[in-house]
Image 1: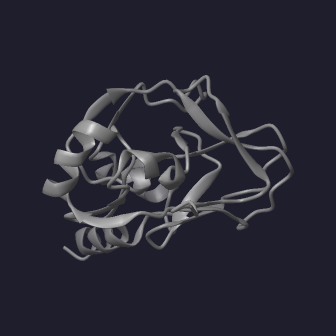
Image 2 (image 1 turned 180 degrees about the horizontal axis):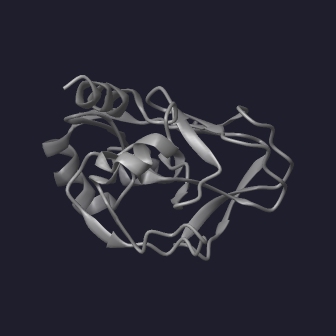
Length: 170
């Protein structure tokens, strides 16, 4: 069975000091190179919340009320891209499901993205990224922080880019 998501052949899934498993570069990756494409089924949030109880976190938000995620436990691993959160990320989303390198990445680095660039959900959690820029706590509403909007200009997913643009025109 083919996996639902794409992970670059320059990457490997390994244990992560940030959380559980992570995606790591085992070869150098160039700026703007595609490192992963999230696959799965497009689901509304209510459907996903029911499935998440069985499957655990495995989604990427692609719209205000839509996510892309697996729907069966035996397809979960093949839908995962295993990118943990970091407050000093090296990859970012372009569009809705494609993750690219924000800078040149050296072999051995864990590939991380800032969930502020993809999430507009209700959660609060302690951050374990360990970066010198660590915010300590991350939320599903961090995209609303002006400093992060400036830091990640051009690196937000499509639905958050639209929300940020709407806020700027007010």
